[in-house]
Structure formats: structure tokens, C-alpha cells
Length: 484
Image (tube, rainbow, N blue to C red; front, side, top):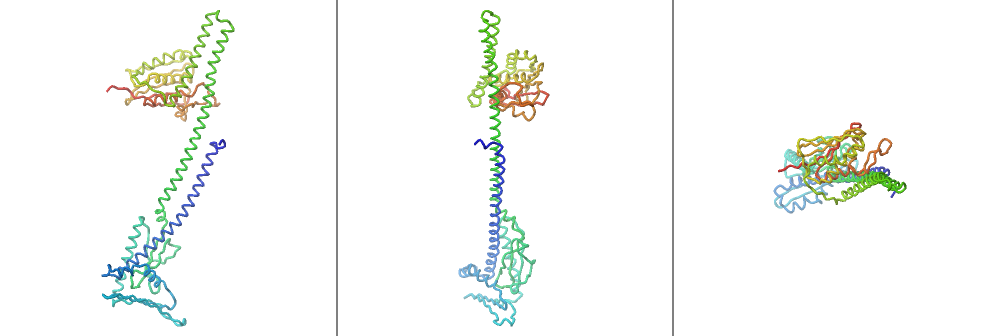
């Protein structure tokens, strides 16, 4: 899909995330409304169950284990009948309730009467006839039942796992007048329960009032909210990784194309030089001029060596990337190795009229490693310093030890590297462009990547200190070999 380039992925990801967010919000809103109804149902059942239990306890003292009492006074049918009796309000209706309990039997009587002639008035009054208790005893018992009722409701609410503000209102059973609490409206409170009696004395009716249930609903939805949030986060993370991967792939493809172009030019130069040298030998019959012939042969030999070195660099990098490189570890005197590498580069240093100096250490330093690869690492870093530093510059190589680690520094007076490129210079194929988007110095972009890989295989790390116009200092940090 060529049309699916990185410039389309970001808008597509944003649109997808917005759509996902909208769908999640719509789903959460529907879930919230359903959960809100469920919470209201639970709260109503808490008050209803408390009313039934307190009523049963007030009736069945001494008869708590009676199967008949439980079957009747704890049955949903009795609860529905009593609630219907309580809620029935008709003009000129007079209701009368009587219950009595003896050792032989229990009597429950519910009586209602109303006038047929609407012109006459009858006091709307409900009365309860009990077993000869005085009005004061009935009021005291009513207050005790009310406290037990409110305590049981609060206990059941606390079991929900989230504290909510609540209060209760008390209404006179006969006339429905507010006895205790504030006037309640559904608009001012999130939940208002039905009115329930809490004994069979029918003095007052209890109503639970909850100002807000929003946080309780959210608390009970916590797992849904967390899963929804995680879904959005994972979707965003997936798009982020996808975009980053595509960007890296694009940069890698561009770097690979640049590498191919650079290597083509690098390979063409020695090939062209060898072709010209051979053509000159044939064209000018240099076999008769041994001096010139030897000169042209030496030029061809030098170019072939350079061509072979470039091919080996690519092959070694390929083997390193696929993990086929096997290191031959041995004990290495790092300062002796540095002297050999610097000696082999003496001609290149002289050609650029530069100064390559090894700062001697007070004592020899040893590491465990592959001598050939460590030498190649040092060669690459010195070669980079020679390429990018101006003529008559100074390159300083030094060693130091700290915390059982050996640091080899390669410091130059080159143009320096911007801080934003300090990590990228070690990536495969990466090379820094100048202001005109051109590489001033030819190269493959593999050298520093090879350096980092070799050092990592030796259990070390690389570091770079550099500022524009103040040179660069590449540092190799390796474990120091110490005898136990």
C-alpha cells in the first residue's frame, strides 16, 4: 500500500483515537445510566429489607424461631400487602389495624371504612390497636425501633464499600406530615426511597435520602473505567509504536540508499584509478620504463588494498549484524595495541600534515578481548578523526582507569557534532549532512556502528563528548582486567 505513507498514518491515528474516545464515552454514559438505576434499586431494597426485618423483630419477640411467623411476616406477599395498605390514600378513608399474639394464636386484622356521601367529612385517621399498651409505651417502643431501623440501613450502606452522605426523613403515618428532617424533592436529591413503616404500631414512616450517588456509581464502575482507559492507552501506544517504526524504517531506507550511493562512489574511485593505471601501462609501453611501471603498479596495488578494505568492512558488518562473528578473547596490552594501530596509520597522518599523539600512562593496562576487533575499533575512530579534522590538527589518544573500567579517549580538533546527533551517529548507515544536505567526507556510515557493536560484545560502552567548533572526544569504556 504505497498510499499508506507516514504522513497519512498520523492523521489516521488521531482520527481513530478520537472515534475510539467518542465510542468509549457513549458506552460509559450508557453504562453509567444503567448502573445508576441499579444503585437506586439496591438502595431501595436496603430500606425495604431493613423495614421488613425490624418489623418482624418488633412482632416476633419470643417467637423468632417460629416457622409460621417467618413464613408469614418475612414473606414478600406480606410485605407487598402491608406496603399497599400503607400507601392507600383515599378521601374520607379510615383504616384500622389490630394485631394480637397469645400462646395459642396470633391475630392480624386490617380494617378500612369510608363514607359514600362525599358531602360528609370523616377525619382521615389510621389507628392501631395493640395489646393494652399505653400511648407512652408505644412512643418509646417506636423510638427504639426507629434507631434500630436507621442503624441497620447505615450498616447495609457501609457494606457497599463506599461512604455516601445520607439522612432520613420521618413522616406521620396518618396524615403524611413531615415529622423529622427537611422537605425532600427528587430534584434536590439524587435518591429518595419510598416511605416504609418499621413496626406494626403505625406511628411514623421512614424515608432514606441520599443527596448524590454519582461517586458511588463511579466507584462501582471502576473496573469498567479502568479497562476503558487501558484500552485507549494501549491503542495510543500501538499507534505511537507503529508511527515510530514506520519513521525508523523510512530513515533506514533513506540511509541505506545514501549508503549505496556513497559506496558506489567509493568503489568507483579505486576501480577507475586501477583502470587508468593499466591503460597507461599498455598505452605508453611502460614496460620499457621500469621506474614508471613500478610506480603505476604500486598505485594499483594501493587502490586494490583500499578496495579490499572497504569490501571487508561491509562483510564484517554483515556478519556482526547476523550474529556470526565469533570473538577470540585473549589478554591485550591496550597501550601496545594503540601504538601498533597508530604506526600503521603514520602515512595517512603525514599526508594530511596532522599530529597523532599517544599520551603515555604510568603503567600498562590490560583487557580481555579480541585483539583484531579492538584494533579495528581504534583504527575506525582514528580514521574518522583524520577524515573530519582540518589539516595540521592534533589528535590525542589517552587511557585512564576509574572504578575497575578502562577508558580510551580519541580527542580531535574537528568541526564537532551537534548534541542531537550524539546517539544517532552510532546507528547503521547514519551520516551527518552539512547545511546543503551534502556529505563533505566520503564514507559508508558503518564505522561507528561497528565500533558500538564490538564494544558491546566486550561488555563495554561508548560515549561521546562534542560541541560545534570545539572538536569531539569519542570514548571507549571497557572492563579492566585485574588479577584476583
